[in-house]
Image 1 (cartoon, one colour):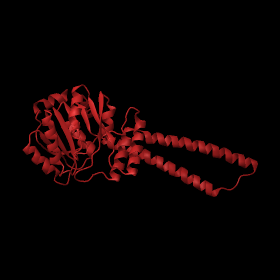
Image 2 (cartoon, rainbow, N blue to C red; image 1 turned 90 degrees about the vertical axis):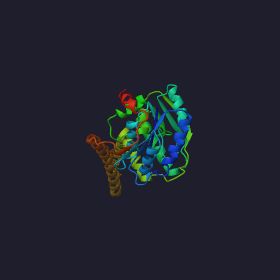
Image 3 (cartoon, rainbow, N blue to C red; image 1 turned 60 degrees about the vertical axis):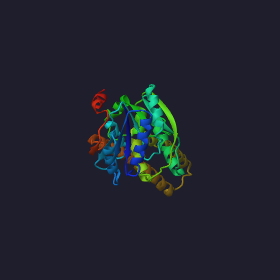
Image 4 (cartoon, one colour; image 1 turned 135 degrees about the horizontal axis):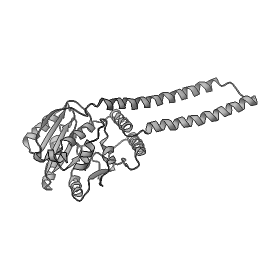
Length: 318
């Protein structure tokens, strides 16, 4: 059975649409399935639509969070609840083409354990956003040369072995796109074009994206720490050259008063030190969040039942 995990945040007008598209597609392909909607603390009619659908159609399940915990929490909640031997994560706004699922399922049948849909293009994005994304993924590449996240997406198919490996990871701060690559396993890729949203607006502001990127960068790599070390070495070389120049001028009797230069150097070095302390403090705050060991999410309600409910416990144990 295929579990389709659909994180949803204020997607009330898209719930029935994506459920209808997926149900028709998977039924036509004769793929046994369940749809798992994860309501990430929506404030619109999202949960009402999910509840009604679960009553109207078999194989549609819903999980509701007590508040907005973020897409990462929604993905892992869906993986935790998935009862199938294989699962697909797909966005609710239909920017990920559902028709690729049948091809992903076929590749899984042929032995692939992770089937990743990679972006042929990034769709409509501003120049500043594209530059920011490129910088972020370049920094992530420093963490692991084997991870190519530039065109990666959350649209993936995962075998039960991969799901269990991800769920066994104890960290609270997760980055699904990177972790699903880090675990390894036999991998296949399918390219797709990002579609424009047909209804509703994106829930990602630049501020949220920046916070998300910073959290993921520091949780998955020590690149900012390494950057500070390199900066320290550059300043050390600069200090040595400047010190040697000052001594030469002093002993040759050509030294001049340089009050403004001294002030400027103090300001630059002071700013660099404060910036470094800020990075260290951010890492310490993430350590603090991890050691509290709070749950990734809190579920307040569930609806529907897996069509493969009798085998769910056995699959998870395996």
